[in-house]
Length: 419
Image (cartoon, rainbow, N blue to C red):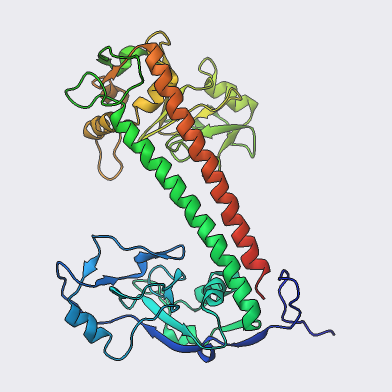
């Protein structure tokens, strides 16, 4: 039988040598976890970070993180110091997140983070990419100890075998994933920026408490917004609370008409992957007859979670299931696109939270919604506002698809470029 060669499925041209294999411990100058000590917080000083500060290859530090005194920092680092190129690995709680230290000053870590300093045989960027590979992550999960918090002992970590090529090939692989990670990070920042912009507009483009006009609006519109009860603008609320296939003498199917519930109605879109249920033709007509949903109608989750808003995406037909309602609007009073944005604006969000009841799972009923007052401009301005936010949502969706493509590409490369 032919012996299996240690080579990856995909590699850079000109590299043909077989990869080597060795224990992680033999490839490191240093393997150490963060401080186990109890440290007093101070107002200003070096940061004392934990596993939660490492995510997607980056070290995140905020003003809310703990500070310790310079004296305590120096005591922790009396016999060792962090260096540029050290690889961080989370080993308690959130296991398997990693990052490379670029600037080692001004912070240290608690015991939930391990410091890995590669020796001359291993490149830092390659080790970081190797840690993110499917095989290495699987080995970590197999060695974790479950108690109050999942964790992995340093001795178990040090016994993990890794495969590696020549330093030259390692450098190529490390740089490749560094560039890919930078693309992913840039894409994430782009999405965060658009979402932050949208959040700001949701505050500025709607009148706040005691105001009759918004802070920001389209040119040419100056009239005060009119106030009314929300339900004065609604012809009918479609609500099938408590209805189930069993009560109709039927059952869910493997395919057919998708049932919309509070689980898959997210803010601004329908998530087709979260516990989807389907009904066949018979169930659909028995359930929805006379109340068929139309494209762009506004869907609102009443509890668990309360306040998510989306719109019916098309006229294919949907079953309205648990903890969601749909508003059938008077089109001469309020547009669907505007209502979808209005219900997500900061002022209305606060009102809904104040009106909600219940313990952990807050909710609102139709009776509660009767007391909700809203402000709205002319239909023409409503349409402008609705279109503006639809374009923002489309932009966010487009950028998120790009991010998803990059992340899937990285997953594929991590599987194919390591043994």
